[in-house]
Length: 285
Image (cartoon, rainbow, N blue to C red; front, side):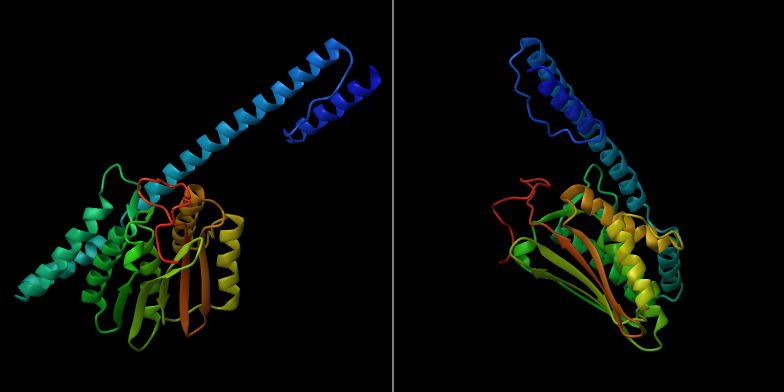
């Protein structure tokens, strides 16, 4: 009556030491042993709660760091855009200069939106479309673009500025490698439990080895350190996973010298629901 419950409590303490806090009460006929067992259970639940709090705080700190990185606008993009506007004015092409300037204003309206880490899909598409308009002015001879999303998805919430870095990669690592006209196409696909945003380009593509490295780095949550674009992709994927869970994020598909496609999987989520999944699906079935 004494040795058996004590042995069970010893096994329980060993489990807690290994990080298994899902413990069950031990039955005993002696009051003191029952009280000791209850103390062990309370201790295990308390430790589990404290560890969960630490995990959440670390994830929020991590998310804040990622958001700060994500919010930084490439200074080369800023310089090149202003330089393009200045040259259009020198050439008296005021209509073209105004067009770029209006797109530039729309781009920063979303980028500098204070206190809002989440935007609607409609706002995110407006932002990335402004970016594409600017880049088309610069690379119009080698680049065209199309954007289209299902209007039923317009009010779904997602982290802001996740599409622009993907499009930037499509242009600089895909389209600019071609010797002919390239396309950047962004569209949505709907499923029962989630929807996808697809960023496609028919640029230079990537090798099977490179493709495997990128997808494995996203699965392992370990950024590629060989180039800055690896960090950009990782940051986007991390923001999505921290907010929505490991079922969501980025997946790459590519064939060398043919195309690259980035699929962004996201849950249906309205502004009222915040970042939580909802039984009331807002989207297309």
